[in-house]
Image (cartoon, rainbow, N blue to C red; front, side, top):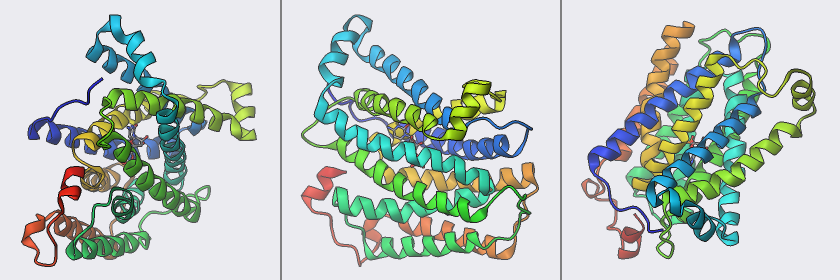
Length: 333
Ligand code: C5P
């Protein structure tokens, strides 16, 4: 199955817009489900269900590409390649960890703080891009990454929201750090596999390979913890699933599919810019929904984050410090 061809700028903007909107709605919705209602659902079941839905959706997309009659033979021919499955399995493990940590973070931090601190994935992704994809950054871009980190740390000082007793900010920040590391590594490694010049496999084949192992891994994670096992055996797999929780699962599924399209047609760093736009939407949503108060330190941190994004996004040739990309680097983009 050949790799899909180039797409229009309009289509890229559409995918970025949808993904950013879903990212913003996702963190607000998760936060809402974790802080309201008497009974709590097992968050690992939501991560598993989203993975399963993405797998089914990817089969549908592949069937659309190959036609229903050739689907079976195409799967046998292109999906079940042990070496490729193993590579995508590494990505699945990282994403499974990231997605579970995201729930832990959002159970302990408010949506806006989560979104802004989670932007630390920018420098992490940049470092991974330099190391794994050999895409050097200009001095200006590194400075913007540093400013971004400073802005994100200022945001962590925000004493705006009164944290209920059951929440632990330290656990929340720890979970964010693990999620950030996994996001950078998984995203860049997935991009490397997807855009390898020697492999011209379709995005949907790659996604099926990713979600096959992802489904197995996230299912294992559900039953890894004694508390989860007891609760599921006593109350059922989908206990306390309100329409809001199903919305969270839906957003994670569709958002993940769009993230893969964005990684394919742009790159992980561009994907992160879109997520930052989402963080601003989340801040507004938190003010409206949870009565979040924004103080000056928070506002300054947010400003630094925005400035660094603009600086990073400036075209390379406007900066004298940057050197022209070599043919090899260009061919990787
Ligand atoms: O926070 P970040 O942008 O790294 O999150 C990416 C999300 O997209 C993860 O939840 C991951 O599971 C999802 N994804 C996906 N399929 C891909 C790549 C990422 O579902 N091919």
